[in-house]
Every structure is written in C-alpha cells, then in structure tokens.
Image 1: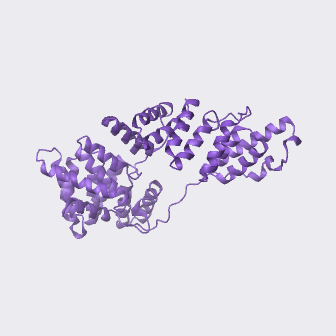
Image 2 (image 1 turned 30 degrees about the vertical axis):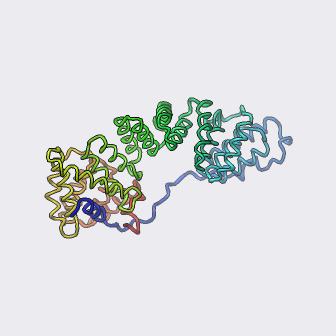
Length: 413
C-alpha cells in the first residue's frame, strides 16, 4: 500500500467512537454580578449625590463592569459601561470598558468609536487602581484590536505601536502589535515585539502566538529559534490544529526527517483527514518517506519504513501483521512523540491481544499522561477487557482534555 494511503487508513482506524460521550461540556464559570442591584441605575443625575456618594457609585460600577468582562458577560458589561458613560461623560475608564464589551460582542465599529473617544477623555483617580487595559495606552490598544479584527491591518499598526509607546510595560499590548506585524509579514518587528512581550510576561498570549513567533523567527533566518518557539507552542496547546504540521515542516527544514514524519502523522491522528492541515500533512509525510526510502544511509530509514509498513497493515484483519513491524520500530525509536508505541498499542488491540495492548498504552501514558489518542485507545481496551467503569472514567478524562477530538464526536470521520 502506498505510504500516504496507509497513513490515511490508519487515521480512520484509530479508536472507534466510544459510547458514553456526549457533546462537549462548557467549563463552568462564576455567575456574573447582577447589574440591576447597582446604585448606578437608580441615579438620574449626579447632582443628586454628594461627592463621596458619586465616587462610591463610580467605583462600584467600574468593579461590576470588570466582573462582567472577566466572566465574558459582555452584554452586562456594556449595559453598565453605557450608563456610566452617560453620567460621567468625559471619563476615560468607562469608555474603555465600553470598548472592551463592544469588542466582545463583535461590535467592532462601535468599539473603535468608544476607543477614540477614550483617547480624548480624562483619567480618573478613583479606586480601584486602573488595570493596564484601562490605563495609558489602552485607548489605542482597543482601537487597534478592533481594527485588526476587521482586517484593517495597516490602520491597526499605528494604533498598537502607540499603545506600546504609551504603555511600554504592558505585555499584552506588545503581543497584539507582534501579531499584527506577523500577519502583515513585518517579521523583524514581529520578532522584536514578541520578544518584548515575553520578556514582560512569559505567559502572555497563547499557543497560536508562540506559533506566529516561531514562524517570524524562521522567516528572518533563525530556524533553531523557530523550532524552540514551536516547541513552546506545543507545550501550551498540543491539540491546536496546525501546530504539529508546522513543527513537522520546520523539522524537515532542519533535516530531522524522523521527527518531522511523526509530527505530520500526529496532525492527522489528532484532527482527522478532514482537518484544515490534513492534506498538506499527508502530502509531506509521504514525501519524507520517499526521501528516506531513496537514502539507504539514512539512520532512521529502517524505523520509518517499519512504521509505514505497520500503518499499511493496520487495515481490517491484517492488524496482527502490523504487530511485529511496530514492535521492532518501538524498540529502536528515539522519538519523544510516543507514536510508534501508540501504533503498537493500536495493532495489539485490533489483533485481540488486549493485555499487551493495555500495558503498552499505559506505558505511553506514563510518559505523557494527557496524550488523548492513547487515552482513547486505552478506554476501548478496558471496555473490551470488561472494565466498563474504568473505561468510562478514561474516556471522560480524554474528553475533558480534548473535547473536540474528532474520534470522540458523534459523527466521527
């Protein structure tokens, strides 16, 4: 069987849909504060309040809007901010909170207007202390983010540059600037901005940001730095579509064909053959195999051909023939991906060798406890062994870690 076809077949075979898995649950969050109980909505005119009462109402309202924004209750946040803006017409903080709420509600044009009004408004000196996104530079930040969301990149750039100049210690402003620079192919500036953001806060951003940083580093000629940044991206979110495909591409550029092949394969196993990066991952995995097949001196030639052969056998009743191939590959591999061992566990399971399958899969999970494909296969193995309770606990754990894993969906590919 052709190597690419074998890989595609194996993706379909990995772990059939397990019973007992419903739709993905939404993580619980703290219920938002009730806006109706705020004194703000009982006030018709600030003149009816004393100075201390006005300050207290303002502070209470700012805190309530923050609470709503933190809970992603943007409608409540907008309702509060609108009312505060009506009473405190030239105060910056409620305008910034209104811009944030409008952005959360995808009201981009309104968010731009609010942010621009905020840039002309005055700062308050009332408690609580202003957060970075309510402070100097925040107006330009919210305007820049709203412009970016509407793909007005060239307008977003000066706004975000101004935000970083006004708030040079704000990591998120630097991160947002870096993202726009990357999207507009300003790789040198993107690298500087990402480096500054990470210097200020090593946890700023998400896995996609780390991936962009990696790509920007590679674009300016730093392949080693790009691979390191992509590894950080995978550490942040190993299940983000495209990350394994991107890592495979960088490793292939670096000449590490073995790990490149395994990352291309992982992209397919994690996101299915209908995943957005599947066609390219499948193509490049096949190209890597063609390269090592032609190079008799390649140190991992034997290993990759064994894995490729095993993938070909993982088709129906030929799973038993995959076992010796994958056992040999698993015994000689130096890969940290755990992929040869995972495929061996699959072959053992499909050939009815349940206890060996369980032992292999548990050994994979000892090294990577949150490896969802291994958890999914182990759950099926436990179910076949009659341990339905532990099987359900295992699949529940897999679902909690990666609720969108295609093999856990009702309409699995």
